[in-house]
Length: 131
Figure 1 (cartoon, helix red, strand yellow):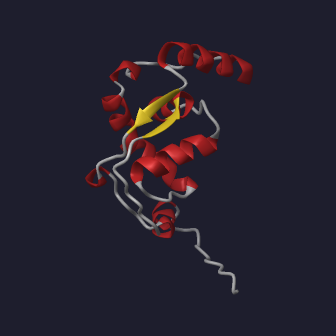
Figure 2 (figure 1 turned 180 degrees about the vertical axis):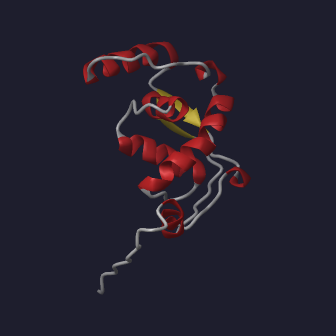
């Protein structure tokens, strides 16, 4: 498990930020993952992303209060969502600066332990590769 907290601001796509603040996937998952990793200073596993998003969303809205209250409409196609995000980018910018969470605002949990917490009846098998 790695925790690499750096108090350095970085830029992230508006789609990734809105994905975290609205709970709707509006950017490639890799961008959302990178945003959450960067904000937490953690190397998160996929099953940890919802918890990290819950930790990060309030901080993103504190940093960018103009995004508070944005609701994603129900749209029909992926192209409709792309068009909606593009319209938001026209209004707010394609990328925004994001500062990391205060380390006290992120709970570091071993990914395998957290997996067992979510799915206690599923055995966790660790496979390692020898050199």
